[in-house]
Length: 216
Image (cartoon, rainbow, N blue to C red):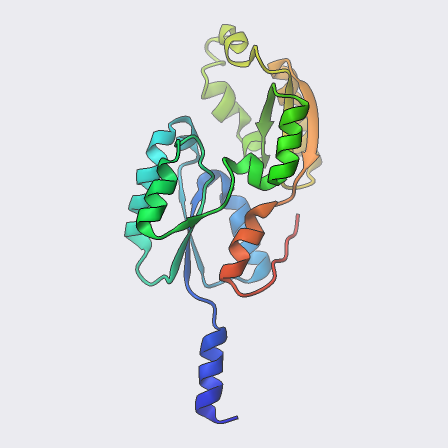
């Protein structure tokens, strides 16, 4: 094959530079997927995980991050569900020519839409935790909701819940114990469901032109 044709074929096979704008709660999983798969052409930038308590910040925060870091990238992928933005995030992404992972929230794309819907239907009063939320339960849930200062608020926040569902990305015995302890602390039944990285890798993989590998 002539050298010029060989160079042209190599260029066609080269993956495009992709910017991933992610929720900070997904950072560990995204970095691990990139490491395991060798996706060196992906650039990751994360926004504060705490914005889930103020979802109105997410759409414009994502827009600003796209504007700040789009240069040098061929496409932009966004690792957020709708996350309580009421469609505003999708409006911003349509304007910016970016694509997000499907689903209303990370619980859905971790578990898979059908599995999550089945879990929700089985017990509508379910409170969900991921690996990230288990690791930061004290800061995000207990302190974040003021339960450390006002324990009487527990029944107000969780009175309508009946169980805690731990959607686990890794098979980690310590995290399972911490999740079970969190359920007990909130006065909820405990349910464990292993998801792995769910739809994260499948969403990112097409930008790499390679099959996805996952280590959980």
